[in-house]
Image 1 (cartoon, rainbow, N blue to C red):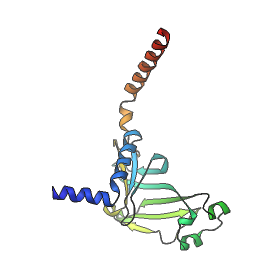
Image 2 (image 1 turned 180 degrees about the horizontal axis):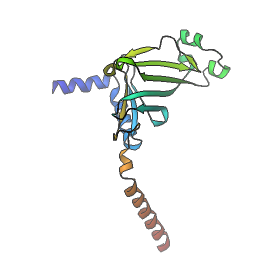
Image 3 (image 1 turned 30 degrees about the vertical axis):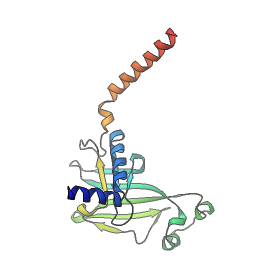
Length: 178
């Protein structure tokens, strides 16, 4: 009981529980998500429209790219100075910029990570991780050895469409009898 309570407390403190719920929702509907758990800071999830992934036939991640929106004003002075041309709306914070993160499997099973904004590789974001230490975790919901996972909904789409047809027929019959 103490171990379980300790785990629950740690999940609450690290704000991981809400992110895990989001990852599960993404898996049920979309089939895949990426969970990012940094050593320090807030964890987050990436939905299907925010990432791309290439996996081997055995399911090992070969390459991942994430896409997220960042505001120029929240970037450190060092990163702001690295960026080339930034338009006025981005500079004053009224327009977000796109941050890409590339994760690639390299030699000796090590993953390299780098980030870029506006086509500029951000110095200081380069990192190398062992597979077990990589803060980006690809989560396929139903894994059939493809690049992307399959969703739970996909297995039942025929049933859902049948239910929708029945629902529509009942509505039409009720409208006619009224």
